[in-house]
Image (cartoon, rainbow, N blue to C red):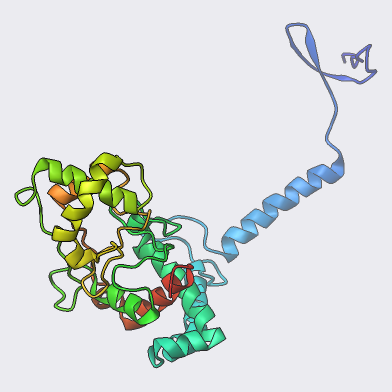
Amino acid sequence: MSKEHIDEVTGVATTGHEWDGIEELNNPLPRWWVWTFYATIVWALAYTIAYPAWPMIKTATTGMLGYSSRAELKTDLAAADAARADYRTAIANSSLQDILADDDLRTFAAAAGAAAFRVNCVQCHGSGAAGGIGYPNLNDDEWLWGGDIDTLYATIAHGVRFAPDPETRVSEMPAFRDVLEPKQISEVSNYVASLAGMEYDPALAGPGKEVFAQNCAACHGDSGKGNRELGAPDLTDAIGLYVHSPADIAQQVRAPKHGVMPAWSARLGDTTVKELAVYVHSLGGGE
């Protein structure tokens, strides 16, 4: 019988295993650790018996307790829907003015509208509703058709230039490339830039004022403040859909771009449209 070998450095017996002169010390795990490990094995086996665990061909083992995470989620969702039902019923049966006057309803509607906005509107208006080129900034306090709650509701419900909805918002700016000379377009573009506080050429803006009065004031007003009845934008607003310079303005005068917003009433329902209107109104630009 061979004598047990003791490591000279540690004074611990070795297992007899050796790799490149390195010997393995015989340090058994503490018994409490071993029994804890055994207990976890027993727990795992018990868990797979009690709960769904093992995948089968088309489904999985159901477990002796019959638990289902999907059923639990369905129950939780049903409870959440039931908790919201009273609020949504109240919103459906209330006018927009009544919703704004009720603190609880307004708070719920704004929160629900924010959720609907994140699903349906951020693709164009951005997560912060700041918009971008061709997409309106909903935080701005300048509105084509008005920013009061009823007007916002109508715009969301029926859209803008959305042909399938007969009540959609419609505003069209004609192309002036065949009406004005290139020099006149440059002049009026610099004049409009001066109204919005952009950099412009004073030599061109001077005569551009007369071009504006003859061709643009009918819709945009003598001072360029716009006309909500026509959906004509306020040209003194520094935030433009398509323009940030006289060159951009000139392009818009020559061949204007017209965006389209879908009508959301048929897609989302009247209650959700009300919630969206309340949310957009709450962003700070609503009137």
